[in-house]
Length: 567
Image 1 (tube, one colour):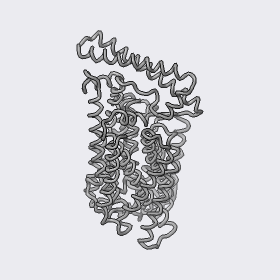
Image 2: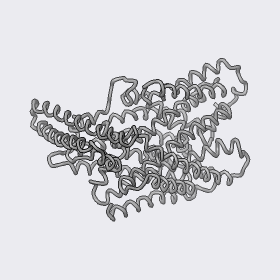
Image 3: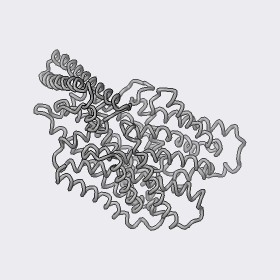
Image 4: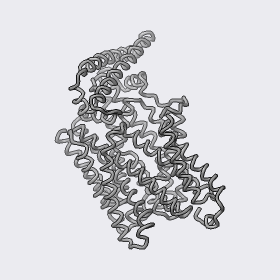
């Protein structure tokens, strides 16, 4: 990077967390301040923080690459989000605020019993602990792409920074830094689209780029076909996505904790409704950037593999030259076909247009075949499977083609996004560890200062775990898919348990506890014995928990104590 890029990157990375620490400086006096910001946050701060926690570095690194490889159909994954936000605003927000809890799982003990609270807390800690490791690994891709730094060094540095920042500022600093970070992110996204379009060759404008992306299937936003094994279609997005986001935003402490900091029920509701309106357009925009990067590489030859280390290793293997030649020839053919298609469209020549589309798609098929052959050769020689360089595509474009100064800004956005999401996750992990496990079962009558210190200690512990798990994240392929697959194994059972607590008054703690275990076993069985797309796990798991919870409760003797619990 240039000196200007370094300056921009360093200034942005210092300014964003510093702003959060400054704005939250008055809200770190006790455990209520540290974990809930004394319920003083306005709706816009909560809304942007909720969005920022989910919009980690994974969003910008992996989502753009996802569109490059697979088109924009991934946006269907978010079609259920607005539905989920409206439902949660009407149900979970007033229930949690009325209960006056620190964590979502504290409510479950009041409604059911201690063992149900403990089990859901453990489920959260396992799932969010893994997700935090994936989020911390994302910046390692940045440093590997730019400087060739080892993954372990980068994840250790990011993890240490997140721990220091989170233990110092708590939830107030995390939330306020998210506000500034999201402003920078939106600016970076707009800049990315402008840059991609401006770098298109002469004669290829915005409309031409959109047409070329659509002609090859990169703008496949909606798939109406119901296919249980297809990860992304309208039905899996609306139904599976709704259940996933109900579980994520309504049962995951990293999200619940955000709207628990609100000044009132109305303010917390507004934060969720803001996300309902803004999140889908934002994800559409990010995926669109990836589709435009694909069009750019129609006229500027991309590498066979975008991961530099993998490409270097592949180039040393027998048989590489033949594959590279095949890829080079396919690129030349595809570029010519794209130019011909663009010219035929502008000329309005229907016959030439049909032939050009066929040539264009044929050339893309040849390029894909060559790239697949390269990946297979690399996997064979390295003795590994499941290789994916999707996470490196957007960064490869940014570092090679972005103007001086803008590279530093984009990298700063990725790093601060990683720090924001990771710090929010570490804070929620520490909150659950202290309030639901440590205080509830080991040290119930300690001082407020003791719990404040314990929260900071657990933040450091979970930061260490996240760094350790990040070493495994390199084997997970597309990070944006990986983090949602992890969630789909755990959120459904939490959602089912909270549904029982909210709406099925006669279900007792024992029934909810065993129903949760049955639901988790069902999800694992679906993953092992079927090919059902992971989004459907969210529907299946939640429904199994509710059905079994009701059935088991009918078989159990009624408990007078259960009738008097919080509902």
